[in-house]
Length: 240
Image 1 (tube, rainbow, N blue to C red):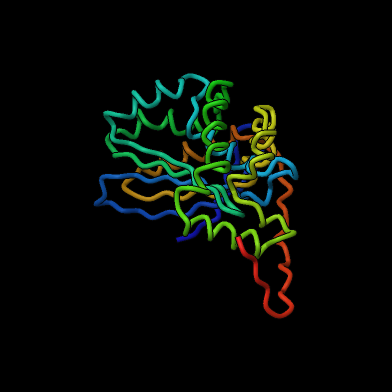
Image 2 (cartoon, rainbow, N blue to C red):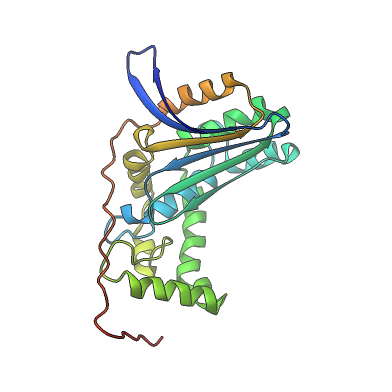
């Protein structure tokens, strides 16, 4: 069931949050998703791949209180996991954990989303992996996957849909940590967020979640429009 929930904070600020709930009283697991309505189409020209870098650094970095290694050590006995999924128009963060670990896992989850550390060492690690993907892995690991990327480039040529969500070789090399911080501040905001939650969770958990998400940047992002794709004139062929 899809709900539009309006909550009035003590500060007097009115915050609108779109929430999708799926109560499952017999489930032992809780799944929380945060969907930000920005994807690779929001990458600046010359910084293609920046949204991907930002999302990966959020999930593969630390928080204001914990390093990435600290987090991995803490969640191991919880059998909890989380990840980021980036597409052309959206960025989605998924967190899964057993309901018995709800209280201990919550600070990690909310810290990653609202207070990522964005350390230089984490950034360097994430960027090295991203650079290796666009330079080598996508070309060598799977002909099928490479062909799909090539077709995507061909189909959307000249639009902000053209480039891979991971970016280009030159553009990834140009991304700096400051670019990531600015992308987070401008697009990963409380005004650009849908919450999805499923499982056996108390209502107080969702209310706390909505309140704490108010710590996200208050920027109203300017989302790029969906492009109009040029239709082919006859048969177009491209050989790679």
